[in-house]
Image 1 (cartoon, helix red, strand yellow):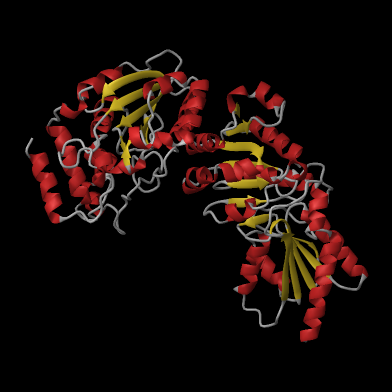
Image 2: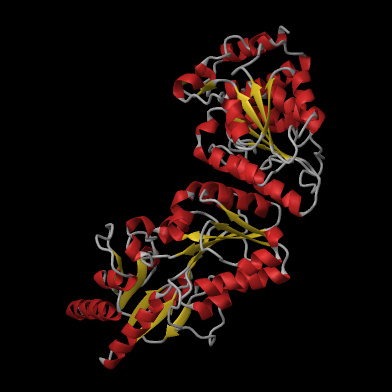
Length: 274
Length: 313
């Protein structure tokens, strides 16, 4: 899985530049955690999900929950790109007159399906969405993006058991497997391996992909569900901070505050270089 | 009360397709008729309360009305964060049916005693907390839970609790009921303690003391207007609850009185479970007796406070 060398295209870099513009005001944010999931969200919103930005509560829309809510900068970047809210909101990230918090809120941000931030909540809520879809005989799909560190939470696995039991074949979990959590590598803090096998054993059809390879992601999403009558899990191998060399795999950028002018400039310069 | 509550869920679900039931591996055979008649809206899940509450939130965010049934301790403490974030932050219609509120499971020990449930839940924005006194009141409550906004915690007693309420006063979530009038003493109570409060008030009457009993079936939102109205003429106010004295009804009443503008001095005491894990098993009644949550206990506390009040006067 050659995720470190996957070359990002202009669109991926533009979405990352939007993230940098978003933190220019507050000078803080989970930048590394957001950069690792840009391609996952980009492919979902460009190629997979059915939605109407002018009608975010449209009953027939596909539901996408960012359970690793601290990655919200990437979500805000794509939602503003798609017109769910004005780009003028972005510079007000984390500020008192803005709608975009350090973790996403359903009641404030159009397109945010559930308020998340505390880890281990999104998959259970997604199960509720999927069960509702089954009851209503609706054909919408539910996607839940979880982190690897997030998967330390027992509630993730309570939910996985439940999704497997109910055979929710319109529910897909995407794991942003960037191999780093707040204080170290996942292998050091809490090893989740064999990660893919865990999802398989909990009743999911599983596919492992390069989470920065747009083509691989598109291909995986186009083949859902991976097994009949089972929920699906995409283990997306990613790089924390992907796209900026001094951010990649650098735990100082898991959550960074007091970001300096020089650092902002360096982020833009690196992203412009592509 | 428990049986009536669950039966009402079934009855309400028969005529309202928005209503779903989720159990957490509790009560073999519980609501079998619901399961048989409305299998698409009946879920019996495993003992994973965090997931259960999140899943209920997801369904409720889609417009459904969820009744989630399990033992009160597990439904409040185990998944507290899911209650706060998934239910209260999203402000969804999930009704938590807490079996064995208070000391009901006394023989099973401290792991099963829900003696701080009111305190922790009333601290959370958007949550409504109700503790009916008996099965008849439960029957009056349940239809109102269908369209009431936001999440609700319904605290259940043991079952087969004596019937002490009537429908003289219309039941309304958030509106306390004056179960007995009196102007010297105010006894504020909730849940099954209403029975003990009424007995205590009757004993006080025999001694020539007129005590009012205010049944606060809804601890949140608190009917502060009613508490202040009936506390106004009284020189003594006591709260009676099957709950720790920290943070429950007694604390809520104390906060209300402390922030009031009464000119006259009032003696106040909370009758409830002291700040310790019960050291004995036994029965609900025996543990309540230990904490003076009895009619005799109420009489004794009230008489003591009246003496203090007289001494000051």
